[in-house]
Length: 176
Image (cartoon, rainbow, N blue to C red):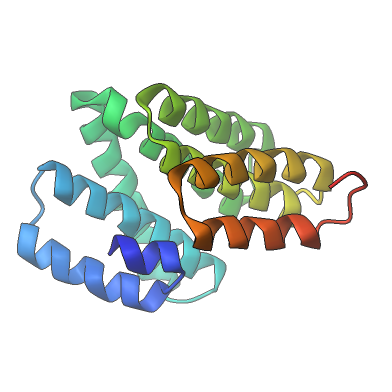
């Protein structure tokens, strides 16, 4: 599940998540909660691609509900995940721009506080993509992408570093 998501294989990720849900059930054990988080992220990716809309909306709703329950029991482990899913939900509904930004920032800070450098990088990456694609604010996108780059370099993910470098190169910003 995790490898498929981080590698950008949306359909494979969805397939693997269904297998995990069948294996772990709908329980609240940490591995099931993490699978539900990636299920939510994957649902958002599918919504952006205009695929499986009704199923993806329901999947996102369930993932957010699961993260709310998980964060109530273990804030340090799940609050950043909840805030990221909420930010992404706001980004696709186009309703409350400032709320989306606040949620991205809350996810970044929560992941940083918990020491989840890869999830901090993911939240920075998603915020950068939000500013690049939705807000057309390349300067702000660059700020978030640079933070993501630092996180992914510290995490040691060459694949994600290369992806972020391509995103930075695609921006038309002086000084990038």
